[in-house]
Amino acid sequence: MITTKQRAELKSIAMKMKPSFQIGKGGMNDAQTAQIDDYLRVHEIIKVKVLDNSLYTAREAAEELAEAIGAEVVQVIGSNLVLYKRNEEEPVIRFKSK
Image (tube, rainbow, N blue to C red; front, top):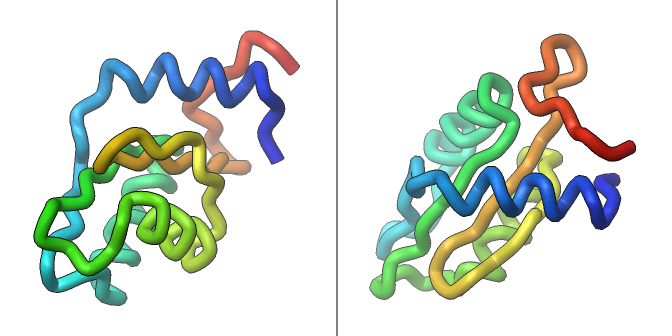
């Protein structure tokens, strides 16, 4: 579980990022979910864009993805979502606050 201060730090990191993945009319499949999980293992944070033709809203996609891969939803703004999953072995993001 991340604290409010950690969430704020993650939001500031995500603000500078471009979406790494898109969810379109095909929805989410196991392969895409596995790719996102692999990406999070390396980078710990990801921004995903949900396209207008998707069957999911950004909130629905964020919650489903987070549950499937054990990540935390940092924020959902418009059609973008940000997820965070800490890499316990080799952490990438070092929080200033505890």
